[in-house]
Amino acid sequence: MSQQALIVSNAIAVLLLVFGLYFPRYRRKEMVVAILGINVGVLSVAMVLANAEVTAGLGLGLFGVLSIIRLRSQELDQEEVVYYFSALALGLLGGIAVEPAWLTPTLMLSILIALFIGGHPKLFGASRSQTVVLDAAITNEGELRERLEELLGGSVHRMKVRRVDLVNDTTMVDVRFSLPS
Image 1 (tube, rainbow, N blue to C red):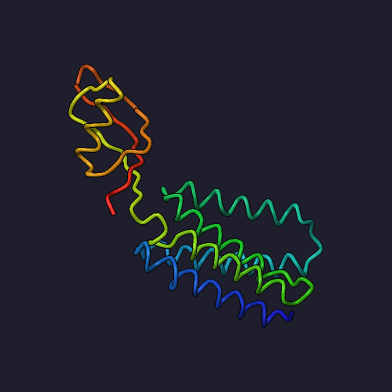
Image 2 (spheres, helix red, strand yellow):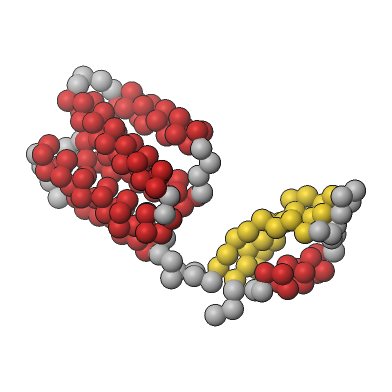
């Protein structure tokens, strides 16, 4: 596949990723420029590395450094990390010509399909995850579950107590629950 075809494939894929999947679901405009910027940057570096006499280790090292710098600069949800790394992967795929020629667009499409299905709002739509701070120090698991179900209006599937403060009379708990259908 020619470099021009790879660039066009990457552009189509990252635009679908950002404007077809990410932004309609998460509405964080600052991430749009981050995802687009990292994709174009990685695409450019991958194309240069593919045509230069350097080792794959250098390219992978650069990939790691780019991701660490970005992920340490702002807290991202797990879903947003996936979009971010997908933009990195699309850029790498678009930057290196491989044979057979159909492989690159197929891999790009597989990334987009995985995100479309795995992150679809209707998939597990009633499932929720939340950190709750209660105004009572509750050490009894059954009592805690009842209180959370009443407060959240759903069925608690999993809960993990993060902190019980007997002095200030609070309980912090991570809870996984589902709302009624």
